[in-house]
Length: 341
Image 1 (cartoon, helix red, strand yellow):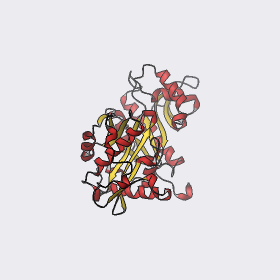
Image 2 (cartoon, helix red, strand yellow):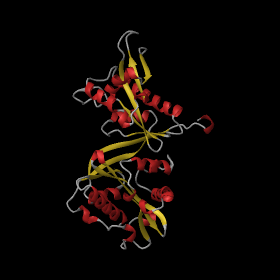
Image 3 (spheres, helix red, strand yellow):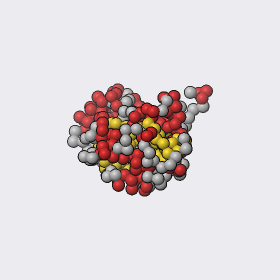
Image 4 (spheres, one colour):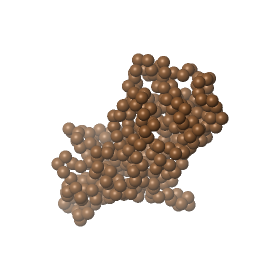
């Protein structure tokens, strides 16, 4: 980097300048957007000390200018999400090659901070850039992130007859599931057993999965479950476990998200013995009906790997429509030995 450019960790005196680089550069008023980010950060679990930025100045008494920045936001399930500064509308200082190198520096600095200070509480860094944001994908890949797929975000608008999709008030009594299948909501399972049954069902569904298979093995299933539970408002009545010959081999998790006025299909997965029997459609239909019974004007949303053709066919048949795409990128973090934590 040029001799007058340094990399610094976020501190209060730099918050606004860093926020100016982190907000969308298409905002008509960058200053206002930056103020809103700083003011709302605590409410959204954003700590601006978990940023690194490249700074330049022409002398000790001159104004410091934030050139590039990376923000880390901690999530459930021992994860951290990364966000990197966009190119300036007028062009990046020093040109695109130098800007690329500076962004990589800031991302690496954030990952090193996580490895140094947060492991074993954070073990996986993530990023979800828009595929059109090629600068971001290049930066994260240069910083050691690897692609685990492209996600398609889909939404289903409410329909007048959604409640009629219900399979009945109690799925445990529904008699049209394939032979050997039984479905219970988490609310019907003893609390001490719920996590265990969820984990066993999720593990079964990961066998030969078509949904981001590259993620398998990067985190413990218990961590993934914690991430699922953190989505929206967890309601045990909207989480179902599918048993086959009394073994939990599948699951369907739905969570209301009041701020977005949507119910999210957090996860729908079936083990090999349950596939090809129409169960996914039945459970999705029932989830739509139960969501409509609670909030009839809310949409339903989900995210799916674009390579998962069976899931895409199901969602499209159920009138989900794509509204966004994201590249899913991850970097496992170096975990300290236990005696150093």
